[in-house]
Length: 238
Image (tube, rainbow, N blue to C red):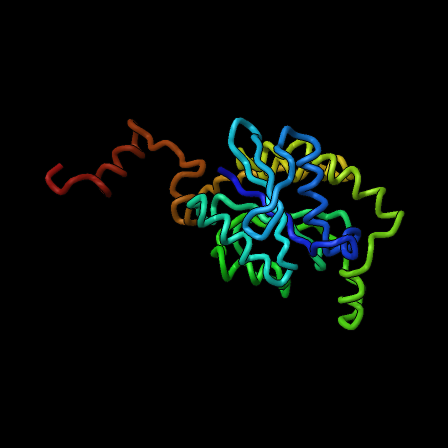
């Protein structure tokens, strides 16, 4: 089973907050695929379904952001899951709005929800970070993350959620780079090309070796010069 957790705060008050983009992303996956209705368990809203032929549990912790790990940890222990079976989707201040990154492990970057997940679930899980941009100064961060998305943000939010929902089976198959490319293209960016393989370097020959082999003249086999060379370099008993 793969557990996909979207992070956010429960209640209508926080529904449109930037901090709730994880909830929004999981809701988009739920709408697009054949998941069960949302039910309450593990101090969360959960829904079961399949993606790419594998059982998937969607979970939205209702413990408030800072205690997200308590809820997700309960679900993981119940299903006997490892950190490698977990994908967490959440907001990222240090990515510009609409940028997305997916990686396994790493630090919490000051995100209290991720601090809690790390504490209760381990750290080697996949983290799908959805950029919400930074307000520019630390003093404005709280109002920024707990503020609602603006209407203009729909221009990138809708294609982001559509691309994620359409290609959610890639999360199951571990096709992380392919998923990132799908999302980048949906947002008008360019797919990332794989890094070229380094060319094999030919070891440089020493100048002595080059001098010995480069345009080396053929030694005469007959005539006066051949006789002289034979006397100079031939065996002593010649």
